[in-house]
Image (cartoon, rainbow, N blue to C red):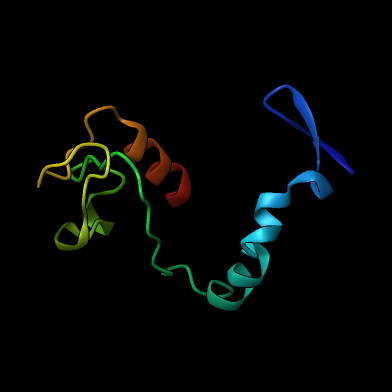
Length: 88
């Protein structure tokens, strides 16, 4: 079955990466019925005071993997965008 994705088409059976890391199995085992399942994002940091994310960011566990420093600030916005997509 083909579905539209950003104007291009892809086939579900061609998404080898999701199958390789067993996303469906993990999703069903750990998130079914649990809207508070923790999520780890390895990215460029996070805007920890963002109005939609602030109440759900564990600052003491956060790290910016984009630059090597102690701040969790998202210097290019990518990590915050990804966190927002996941939170939605």
